[in-house]
Image (cartoon, rainbow, N blue to C red; front, side, top):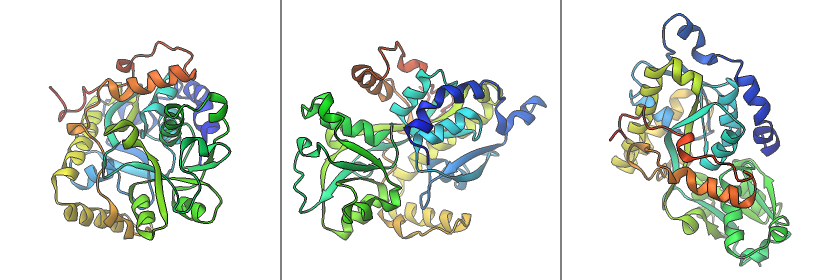
Length: 338
């Protein structure tokens, strides 16, 4: 899977390619005066995304999803949407900021994941690890699913708040490890800290012998972590389709937190079995929440402003004048409408 070099550093080139495309997934239909009815996307192994749940619940109306493969990287997922390989993608809001600075013609339309007590990202060490503080991480390895995204931002926030200097922070090494292998890599001593979230986190906790060093919720409280984005040309040509998709996702997110957890688990298991991707459903029982904190996944300025400010402070944006309003719209989310 893509790392920061392939997913974000290549974004400028990807944007140039995207500018020559015409919304691939629905361009032929749009050219004929019809709006796209099929949206290509990437999934996650053993998980049911809000978009997949929305389709199964019938919330997407006549819009259908077409799975083209899986990803473990938010930055890669939104780059695929930018280049036209998919029609929508989802990623950490800070990664969206970085891609937007590269002039990517994308807009966030709905929050699809976040962090709360049920769906937080934790950074775990072995129970008997000598690592007790941020300073102990100097010279150590942290296993994350991808670079330039949620885990990296949370880790650097933790290190910065703990008073580490930029030079010391550079000595903390982030290693890309597939999420399904992260727990084992920690227990085998291949990494010193494991970034774990979702059901993989809870499975690892159940196995015992690990403890959290820091979590994103401890640092920031509950927050919307990531959004679904679409290309601007696709939105312009397919406004009704985008409205159905966005509103459907919003309804699915709300459905997931309004139902008894057993009902959600049963639905997830049914969806995973029905799609026939040869996946294990054992992790479903650990699912607690998508973590979206706003009703209907409504996006707010602070979902992006915190990361714009942070990236400006670290010098990654070079004091870019990007504003939150440049990144998102709630216009297609009928659930979140005023």
